[in-house]
Image 1 (tube, rainbow, N blue to C red):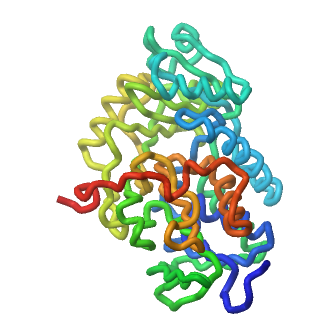
Image 2: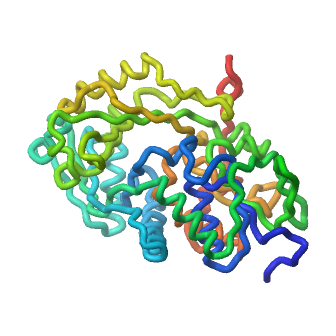
Length: 391
């Protein structure tokens, strides 16, 4: 039953990044009146989705239940492409590699087998022959995922938001939400330009959830993400036909993509935990020398065909929970507020499926998708005080 005119719209979506833009699109597809609020411009460079590429894979390295969600997302990505005529998802194949007993590698293989997905297992000699761009040791192994590739994140976010507008949604960009006031009959959204009441509100501002909801201040921790681009000695060895999207796991956590521009490739490296961001209004954008030194040392060892110093870096902010899984579902103390945040750097490929789940929750109050393990009322430790306040 559609809400009455006492509401400005059926649903307000706070944050129009990956999750928010897809949620607005999926709600608008179902005929709901949607208002989307974005603190910056749609497709901005300050969030978790920026950086030209995001990895897509249907294999799961941690949670087997996410494989079904990835397959649903694949269909929805193709649906968005069909509706808009834009090419967003490029399935060029993917590689997961690392020590043969690395838990993430073992889990990826297990998820592929359990779901009946096409895949290929490579030993170290096969890896060395096919992918000499990587350091391969005698104890390394790999799993090929033919249904892997990359997404164009900025284009995807802008495309989903525009499609939502074409279907009747209203977008309020450069509009900061100051707070929410839920009650039994709806939710008031307060902004710098005034307040509006909605039947439901979806909270999807990524790492900035704590700036919208006080309850998120100890639940979603903002962390700074640095991505870097490198010049190969021979660019032809890094084109998509011979250098698939990859993720290295085990003793080194890193990911990367084939060249898009014919000159450089992007690699993300986790040498330590991403730095905490205490003030999301003033995220440090300078990449310090110590981090660059660690990047260089890693590239020299693991990617010997690259010039070891990055030629470009970008800085974004991601929202993390203590168990690494997002908060997806009604806020325990206010059921008209739906949380969709805290994706811990791993939400982009699922974004349209997450948006569809949120649409289920808003419209029907439930979903048939197996996402109960992501419910906000699950046992979840808060971040310790020293992680929330600078020393």
